[in-house]
Length: 311
Ligand SMILES: [Ca+2]
Image 1 (cartoon, rainbow, N blue to C red):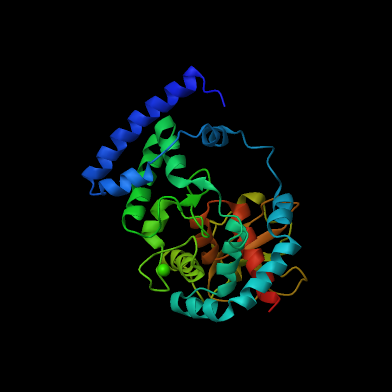
Image 2: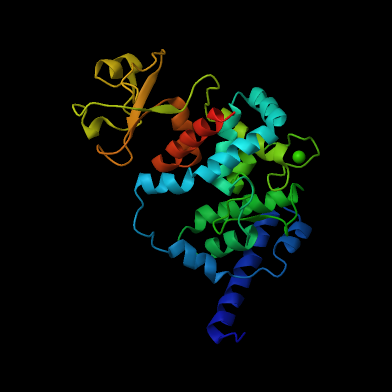
């Protein structure tokens, strides 16, 4: 392929940036050997910038999103994966206080149960984004954490693959989440969220547990709400006791009373008043810490329920 002068110029300028970054990393205690390894043949990746700058396509409705993300195929595979890894998931679920179906649902939505973890070189992707500069500080910090993860021996530089934005392994953790939450559950000395299911499952469970998950509560539920409740009431932050929602006329979809526990719930209506409405509990807010999207959090809850219902 022909290399134009401007591409060659970009690469030279990128290489100078990398040299400076390596000096900064060494000053923070990362070994020269790790840095040489991590940046050996490192290339500026124009494709990553393209993806970063891509305008989102017309926004999907929640109904469209749910059809893709909580498909019948994914529900079936989720049920199969839960059965297949039942002993391990039960053990991890107990250890961290997280019901196994939520671990499987997150795994299924993030990477299609480990089948699609992203083929980008995480170091090159993060370095490209940090060098390019729109969010230089954020991606520079993530890059620094990524080289520290390699330096600690959890994964080799070559095998550190992820999404174009640096989300890594079967749980799609950014390096900062990795350092905060990743677990070496199989005790081989490596937190290997790329290749080890015990490590990946425990890392996801630990993320939820440390973010306030309650193992004896659900995420929320589909309800029927009367038209007297305005859309302005429908946010997860508008917490009310379940009794209050019941008094306002909220019922199960079949008209039966909602089960009353001593807890507060918000309500979301991702497609507005004409679409489905969900009561959301504290665990829903925990899923929103993982990914701050109502579509995502609701889909994780619905997929977890569907997986558990098939056992
Ligand atoms: Ca391990």
